[in-house]
Length: 490
Image 1 (tube, rainbow, N blue to C red):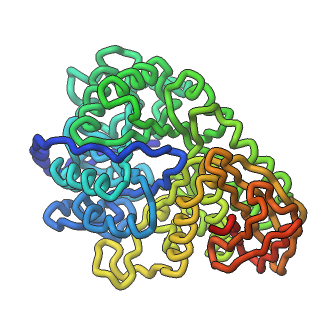
Image 2 (spheres, one colour):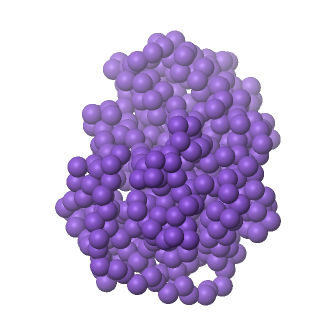
C-alpha cells in the first residue's frame, strides 16, 4: 500500500498525570464475559475542545469520539448487560493522513502510532481515561486495551528519528521481508521486535499503561506478525508486573481452534479470535449448508486447549458487518445473534450492531454509533432499532443467568432440516439449556428426549416466558425465523 503523509501543525503531547490505580473487577471466569468492542473515535463525543481536524462527513477523518464521551454513555453498556469493554488503541497517532486508500485517511482508529508514551489528544487526557476505567470497574465491567507491537504509523517519528530509524523495516528502505514476522503489513513500518532494545522499549511503554490505568487485559493486534519469543517474554512480564490474571486476547488473522494452537500450547495467549464463526453462522441462517455440518463446527470449538478460549464475533472493524452481509435481513440477523450468545467462548458485540448499525464494507464498518433522537455526537440523529436492542438485552441476560451457555458442553438434539436443536449442559452448576433455532420460512416442530439434567422438573421459555410441562419428550414448536431458549423452571 502506497502512503503519503501530509504535514500538519504539530500538537503538543498531553500532560501525563499521575493518578492512583483502582482495584480491578472481582475475579470472574472469562468464559462468562460478554465483550463489547468500541472504536473510541466513533462512539461518543464528550469534549468538543479536543476535536482537532474533525470532519464527521468524511469516512477517513476523526469524528470526535473520546474517553469522556464513552464514560458518559456507560449506561448504554450496563443496561445492555455487557461485562467487558474492549477499546481501540489510545496512543498518539501520526499527525497527518495517508492517501493510499484514495481518500484522506487519518489514524482515528488508533493503529498508526507516532508515540507509544503519549495519549492521542483527540481522545482526551490520562485522567479521563483512568476515570473511564474506574467507572467501568465500579459497574463490574472489565476493560481490555487494544495494543500494537508489530508496527508504527506511516512515516512516524520512529522512522524519522536517527536514533530509532534502524528499529524498523520499511518499504522506503526496501527492508520488508516476505514472511509473516518480517513483512510490512499494509505497508506499515515493521518493528524489529527480535532486537532486545526494541522489544524492551515497546513492552515498557505498553505495560506502563496497563499498570497506571489498572487495566484487566490487552487485546493484542497482529499477533502472527511478531515472533513467539517476544510473546513469551510479554506473557512473563505481564504476569510479573500486571498480575497473574491479566488477560491476553490475541488477533491471529484468520484464526480458529487449530491455527491458534501454537500460541495456546506455549501459553502466550489466554484467548484468540475465531474468524470462522461469522461465516459459519451467517451461512447457516441463510440456508447454506446442512444443519449437521454447522453443528459439527460448533462442537469442534469445544476441542480448544483446556484453559484457553475462542472469542467469536458477527461484525468487526476489519470485516464487513453481519447485517450488511445479510442485506439488512434483521430476522436472520437475530438468529445469528442468538447463536452467538448461546455458543461457548467470549462473544464480542461490535458497537452499534445491537441497534441495527449495518456496518457495511470498509470504511463503512467503522461508521458512527447510532444514537437516534439523543443529542450524542457524532451519531446524533442516526436511526437505531430499539426492538433489536431489547432482543439483545434478553439474550445477554439469559446467557449471564445460565452458566451452561458459557461453560457447558454441547450436544445436538436435532439436526434435520431447518430446525436446529442443541443442549448446553454445565454439570458443575447442574444447569442445562435447550436452544432451538428455525432458519426456515415455515413453522417447525421437533420432538426430542426430555433432558436428563432437568429431571422431572418443568421447563420455561427463557426468552418469552411461559412454562413447559415435564414429559418423556420435549416437544418444541418454533415459529419461522425464530429462536426459543428453554431452561429448567425455577
